[in-house]
Image (cartoon, rainbow, N blue to C red; front, side, top):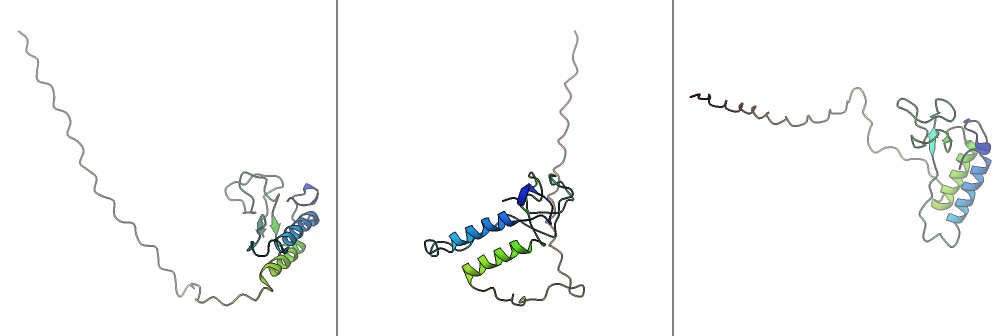
Length: 145
């Protein structure tokens, strides 16, 4: 669902979208569906990404906004500043899964400059080129009588 009034600005209102997401969540957590649904998804997370200009199609080098490249960027985007939408999505996630706990620490240390990642293995060598075919034999000299 697009932003209110068909706006593309990241600071424009999202009240209609938020109401729609709330309705979807209510349905997903209703008595009729609680045994058959495991979650819901929304379209689409843009985070800090912003279109290069309103109503533009994505092209190489543009920030990702969650919209497919062939669609107008920012149309369905949920931005990092959409706090009301974040609250709706959080309440829905909690209704489905229970209160969200803090994220646990990663079970491994991310790579650091002192501990670089190993480079990927080199590809196998290419097979040797086959020799060029020999030129066809020349025709025998013609004999004149």
